Amino acid sequence: MKKAVLIFALICLIFQACEMIEYHPYDGKITGKTGINNKNIARIESACAGKTTIRFILMSDTQRHYDETKAFVKSINRRNDIDFVIHSGDITDFGLTKEFLWIRDIMEKLTVPYVVLLGNHDCLANGIQVFNEVFGEENFSFIAGNTKFVCLNTNAFEFDYSHPVPYFHFIEQEIKSRQGEYSKTVVAMHAPPFSEQFDNNVANVFQQYIKAFPNPQFCLNGHEHNLKVLERFDDGLLYYGVPDIAKRKYFLFTLNPDDTYDYEVVEF
Image (cartoon, rainbow, N blue to C red):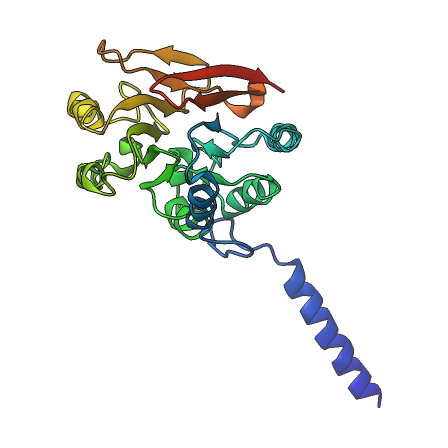
C-alpha cells in the first residue's frame, strides 16, 4: 500500500514538473485562432459590398505596447462608424510566438474586422512561419466597396534578398485580377520606399507598378514610428505613415463616393 502511494505521489510530481517547463520562445506552438486575415477579409467584403463610403483605421507597430493596444481596441469599440482596421505590421518586437498570440488575443476583442501586415520585427527567427499560421500570407488583397486594398511585404532587408520582396509577380497578378469589381486602389505596406528595410534598388520600379493599378488613391505604411505624410516620388501619390501605437494615435480614412477622401489623426 505504501509503495502504491509513493508511486502515485511520484507520478503527480512528474506531471507538475512538466507543467512548470517553459517552452522555447520560438517553439512555434500555436493555440487559439489561426487564418485570421482570410476570415476577416470575408467579413470585410461581405459587410462593405455595395457601400459607396468606406471608413477604415490604420494603426501599426504594437511591439511590446500591450496596454496601449488594449486602450486602442477599447477606443475603437466605442465607435460605430468604422468598417475595418488595418494593422501595418510589427506585431512583435523579437518574433516570439507568444508576442504574436498576445497581440492577436487583444486585437480579437475588436468589434470590427481587422487585417495584419507583416513587419520587419515579425520576420525574426521563425516569426514568418508563426505569422503565416496565425494571420496568413505575407502578400494579400481584398475589396471594400469599390476600392481594392493591396497589402504587401516590403521588408527586403530581413530576407537578405533571397526572397522576392517586393514580390512583383504578385503585384502584376493583382493589377490584372478582379478587374471590373473595383474602381480605385489603396496600397498598404510596413516599410516604405527609401527606408532601410526596403530594396531601394527597385524603389522607382515599385512605384511604377503601384501607379499601374486602377486609380491609386494613396499608400499606407508603418515602420518609421512617427506621423508622416510624404510625396515620396514627387509624382502626386502620397504615403501616409502612422506612428507606433505607443504614441496613442491612429489614422482614420474616409473614402468618399467620388474620387476624394478625407483623413484625420485621432488621439485616444
